[in-house]
Amino acid sequence: MVREEAENMNADTAIDGVETDRKRNHEIPDEFNPNYLKIYYGRFFPYADMHKWMSYGNDGKHPGCDQSYFGRREFSFSLDKDIYLRYQSFNNAAELENSIKEKCPFKIDIGAVYSVDPANRNAYSGANVFTPVEKELVFDIDISDYDDVRFCCSGADVCSECWPLMTVAIKVIDTALRDDFGFNHILWVYSGRRGVHCWVCDGKARRLNNEQRSAITEYLHVRKGNENSLKKVSLVGHSLHPFLGRSYAEVLKDFFEGTYVSSQNLFSDEERYEKILKMIPDESITSELRGKWQDNKRPRDDINVVRWGHLKHVLQSGKHKVPGIRRCVEEIVLTFTYPRLDLEVSKHMNHLLKAPFCVHPGTGRVCVPIDPEHCEQFDPLTVPTLSRLLEELNMGALGPPGDEELENTSLGKSIKFFRSSFLHPLLKSCKEEIESSYASKIQRSKNPLNW
Image 1 (spheres, rainbow, N blue to C red):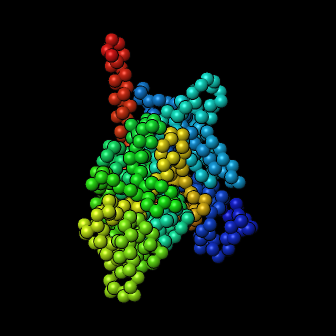
Image 2 (cartoon, rainbow, N blue to C red):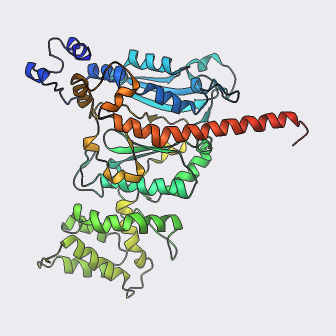
């Protein structure tokens, strides 16, 4: 039994300190434990689904399938004691599963599909033989990059007051990828601690070269300068770019005014509102607002909302002729709320990204998918954890090892969503693309004179 397996691994309870009465009540300590991770990889990790995803339909029997496709994909493992193994590759799902169970990696990263098998790359000679040929277009957004505009937490810490920044990021970027670039097969995943990852898996996205990836990334990038820059967003022209205008009107403005101004107390603290006043390029305006706010009279309504109203009224009144004044309101909102991308992750094909359904070693949380259509309902503090899954295992939520049994656990909903909303539509599209490409190839072979 799995309970016996867990207890045998920790027979003297010295590793995890599980007390007798806690075992009797099926409770597992919250802290991350490598022995628990072995059980997770043995009973919970969705190997078959990951293999189907990474194969993109090439694991079928259709003559158009590239049987070498999955075997040319790079995986990397981060092991205990900071051991890092790059260029791992596997011919099938069984090899991937056996290697993960044997090595029990603390983290699994997924890289590009290369021209040759990564594990045997040194067996090939010649220039440019080992090169990346396909890779999902990926985005990495960490909430620690918002530390200059959030005041409830810092670093890797998150709470219900600042996590909505990630919700807003998902809404803005997901809409742009679908509406502006025509991508359909997009997977959003919780990173396990402080952010979100995005995988764009359409065939045309996977085949983008580095220059094209950079162009898309720059299109989505607004924030300029560094942490010492007073003004991180500078808008030019009389109107916003259609993409920015849509993001501002449909998502960012309402979030900032209706939620963020108050949740972060942006105008009730002098140090905080001074950061905002420094974004205004007219000393007469900042002096006027500062004098009004330093008055000891406190309004009955939320002081943050009232002072934001003051600022908007002054900036948008039209009385001040300093260039750029009317755009300051938009610049402030974008500075505080617009998604902050890790640009280098997205620009290069050979950059790796953490695999979905890993367990974060710092939090014990599983990196589960996020539904972009209902991302405001996602709470990072309630996702399945390693300890919770083992408790469910001990209480009999799982029967004999089997894929269908996972639906009875707290991880089941996430796996079901991954399959129904992402994997199945993706594989249907891949099958159609393989069949169409093969038919075109056959047609060309029958008409060799066609150019």
